[in-house]
Image (tube, rainbow, N blue to C red):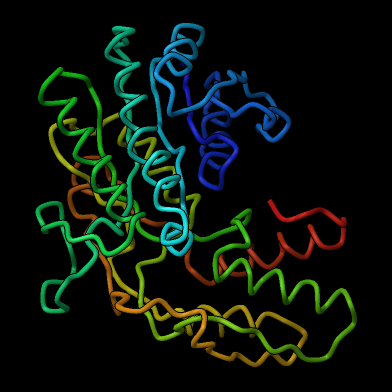
Length: 320
């Protein structure tokens, strides 16, 4: 089977590519100009801008995929406040460009548009876990742009009959995660300090009491694939563990894996005002329709993340 993945050079994209290759599928990727060498080995690369329907349509015509998974876009909640226009372009315009290219090309491919649990934004704790029908009240440009992308995918399904499926993915962790995010950043700091032969380390983080629904990225991409294969285009899926964990617990988990004495300092300058204190979802519909459930525990995710960064530091490789 031929699979086209947008955002294939990103965190989830690389893992999804690996999963598809292990299933003996032919993997194609839409890659920005200059990023060709970052594509996973074995990928058939199509160069283009995901926000340009012409570029996406050319990739669709060349790949003739039977499945499309749209992962490309801006991924940082924090950075979206500093760069809202770029965030909206990547997340909304990019999604509409993919949908419009599918429509114009007349592609029959079952396509998955992955958005985010951040679309829910402000939620009263008594209304947790969130589900497919929970109102969307995003708090950030990132969350709002993902909510709009979700709505666009629903409209292309209802208005044009495209076989497009939606997955709202909650927080992902695991090996290969960008060091802009708190847990891989802590893991990178630990790996560097260990390599330098230090005995202790103080890490600075934001609000470590924030609680989020974390799932290993390898479980997440398996969810995307199961939805692509057997999901219902007329429903909304949430990919999540179904319980929240304080960021502090995961940072402490990384620290416990280190040879260092690691202390954690919550820096007020790294906090976001008005941030939702707790957020987790229900994957009941995903489980019912596909049988998916998380298989990798968080302890393994943390250990694999730290091991990955230790290897990167030892090899002198830059952060992804």
